[in-house]
Image (cartoon, rainbow, N blue to C red; front, side, top):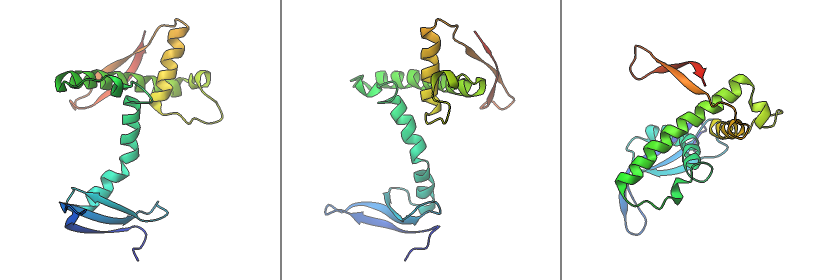
Length: 163
């Protein structure tokens, strides 16, 4: 029996009747899991596979925001890789902007105007969409983040909002 908090993996496995592989098969019982999970991956490292799997729900939330719960880019019917790439660039920039609105809703207390007050069960993206709609319908000025670059070229911080 696999103890909780541990994983076992087998590398270079072949799976299915067609002998697909080589893959790594993993049995993993995470500390916060009620029962073991069984994974098949192209990662050679079992620990890396478990680490990436634990980020799965964050990644799936992003994809659902891009697709069915947000921009519906899956309905674009684009087949050209160049056009799809441009659409993804635009939707990712818009995602960040709407995410900013979600943060703004929480920090300013505006979430009380657009969502229930006893608990929040919306993602920052969903809060942002609701706040953007709330402001647009009421013809309020739409705030834009003012960004200050730091010494590290990959980091920035929000310093204030401008309308």
